[in-house]
Length: 353
Ligand code: ZN
Ligand code: ZN
Image (cartoon, rainbow, N blue to C red):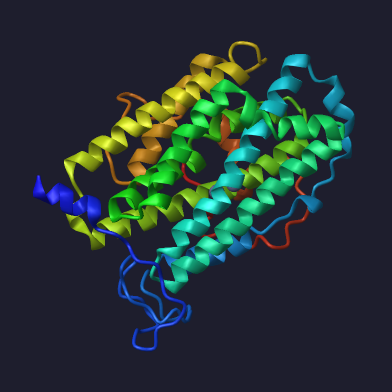
């Protein structure tokens, strides 16, 4: 009992701007000491530099994507497809907006200059993601409609419920930055970046495989690729915090992870029914539901925990793999323009979906 009171109150301290007494290589991911000087050849975690290279290699901007074909095609989509398309963009715009802010808040408490640097790149990528939503919408719908879509998060009750679920988790950490709240906020982060995007991704890839809105889906593909690295980064931070603070590796935390993923999957399935249901050609809700449970299992596993859904061990939507992993060079579904930034081919950040 006493231990749990102690845990609740163990605060994490912000990184100082400069510390003359501390080494350049940090002594801990949180509550460590670090001069705050960044020398990539002298960092604490071996995974940090490869991730840095990968994140830079993935650099992209929406300006690279030619929307002319999508502009002509959008009015030819069915009414249901158009509505779901806009709803998903509205949801992603909210999630990515929150995300750049959460990344910054979390970064303030990371006492390692290299991991902080990765968080800054992550936040920058979220800004690009948000830009892509404005870019797509300003191409295909009038300005008033664009503004309406950017307000869906305010007005749609299902979206509100989902978003509150994540933002409450972030708020607890922002208002009371304890080690425990930081760990829990990262579980919500992995849900946001690694689960809450996924029925939306499925919708877009399904359009693409029917040769619809390929430019928009290309952007979604780049966002998907970034998000997988973000999930990997937060999973690494989560595991390092636990390695350095093993007293938090409790049954209680394991139960929290399990329960939170189950709740998150339920919310994602509810959302999937709204945007996909049984109304989109080529996508069955039974498959989407199994896919969401499979992804929840995968994410819990990445954090080092047991799978919350028994029996969902393989991806039920095999076709999606080819659309998510275009950079592996096996497929060329999208109108890929020359991506001079992407050269690295080792550990390309995609998980084996
Ligand atoms: Zn994003
Ligand atoms: Zn992200």
